Length: 114
Length: 115
Image (cartoon, rainbow over all chains, first blue to last red; front, side):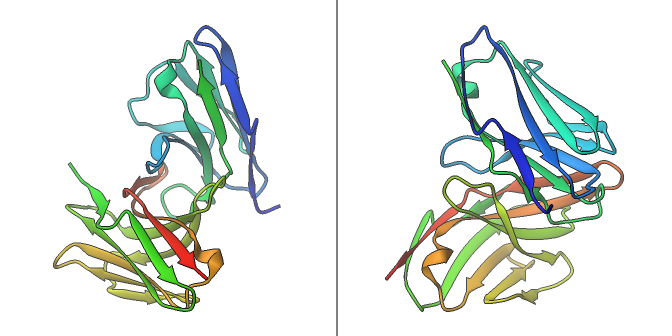
């Protein structure tokens, strides 16, 4: 298995909802990443998990809460989001932390906040 | 702060011709520069990288050039094909030992291949 999978593909939520995005990889990678990509813009790094521990938080608002239950799974819990949080959320992984350049990206979850 | 950006937002190229996509960066402590391709509805896909102490690297149909004097990065695609139509991002990578890689992406160039 050489891919990163993300579910759901699309998500529509209200500002009072709580939802979660899921990312999974079975390549044995030990670093996993969350990015946010607005339309016609480049991806922006949000969080990095290294060996299942949060290692980088790019000053992301607390309404986004990441979680890494095990080395294959990465979740992003969403609560009280704003319409401006609507974007494509991308997950990525690398074999090791800080030493592997190529990041493997999933297809993303397209989130719409009403 | 550090910035990675592109000169041209859209590039139209005839099928079979060579494509050149440019990228400028202003300041960097990065160890690698990378090109990613993003097709519609998909996540970015790694194309090629170049270490900061190199000036040229070749892959299959692609060549990346790094000019540190003028802080310029380019991607050359030989014999462009319809499947090359996508948005191309340059990115700088800073590997932080035991913490992961910090990728900072440039603004993106859309490449349209005309038949």
